[in-house]
Image 1 (cartoon, rainbow, N blue to C red):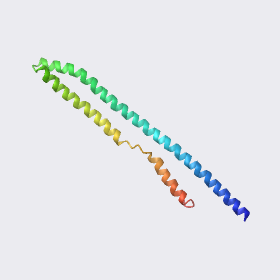
Image 2 (cartoon, helix red, strand yellow; image 1 turned 60 degrees about the vertical axis):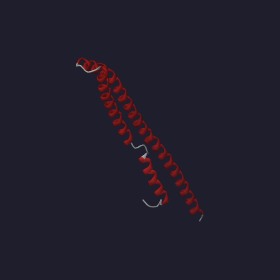
Image 3 (cartoon, one colour; image 1 turned 180 degrees about the vertical axis):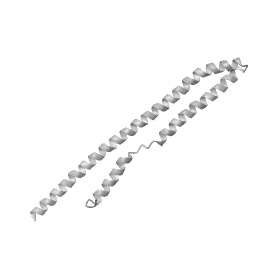
Image 4 (cartoon, rainbow, N blue to C red; image 1 turned 90 degrees about the vertical axis):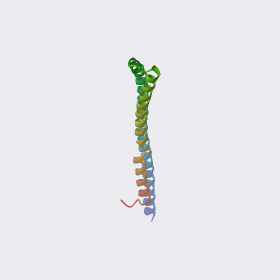
Length: 130
């Protein structure tokens, strides 16, 4: 009887150690997965900023050249500037919207960790089933 109690105590001790190890491993997995998603989020934010910056730089260069070209064709200076401004603003807006749409599609929740935690919880409820 004493031998069975010692074996049972050993089993519970091993189970406790294994559950602790499992929790630590899942925490590590969550950190890695979240870190990966944050890195992707940073890349998307940089793309949004670069797209917006390029749109502004392009707008400045093209405004001067195109407005002067339209004036040379006989349009009034205010009409030339208005047409060019509207077109460039539209292009910049579309670039930013496209990058934001990609950003919104990225799943930020640590899906792998959530799944393994669900599986571990199920296993902990029924450790004898495999």
